[in-house]
Length: 319
Image (cartoon, rainbow, N blue to C red; front, side, top):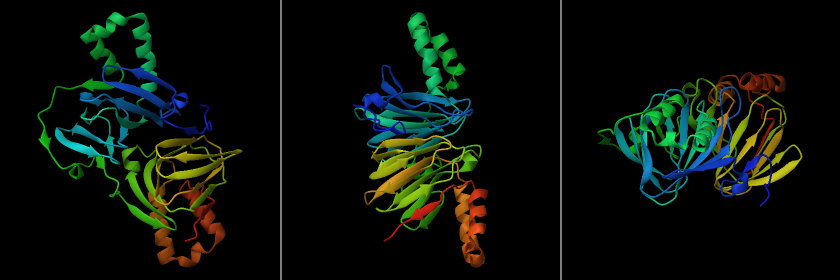
């Protein structure tokens, strides 16, 4: 099956994969390679065998954001055990120990990475497997290789069961760090800039059918969207395509585009929001409340948008 668009990744279509690696517990699929000097926006699907998992470990740099599209996953984080539910995110910053156990068959856990570069790590692993396979059987080498790739292995923890909502690392679909309502959409913040070294934010957008958003100002940021539920039509330069549940869209810098929501109940996650969106929405509300006459000034609105790195040129919704 040919790719529908160079901007679209369909995880269920093997031709859209960058690469894949099989271990004794999972099929690890690279959906998007990292971009930029900070190794941003690498996306991977781990498809796990039943009763397999990842032992307790932590990372010496970078951060991970996990998304569970279906099923359940038993997790341990900082010695606390709980169960992730479908639709949950799990944010794991540098140095936070964590482990996973997958009770179901072929459970998929999606991973969004910043500053980790598993793609590069897999290249080294495959080189070792091809040229020095005996080294992979050496526990001392395996531990040294893992640490060189930022993974610090831990002992099996003594755990305390807790409700998942009590853990700050767990982000459930119905609870955002902040929440705002705009015409045709409810926005819930999943990840804040204070958690990403001020590089990006992550937002859940619950969108109504008919919402249309346009970006007509070329800018120097990558954009990454996950259509978590529903269907969205994208028009990127000269290409038009639809993205469905579970699919990803990555827009390169200096590329104008627009999107239209085609189904009621659609949920889109902006996974690499370069806009200072929380600040934008808070300050927009402040101006609308305290200085409404300013917002009527088109030149003022233009400067306001640019200040917060927001290059949206049109937001249209008719109820």
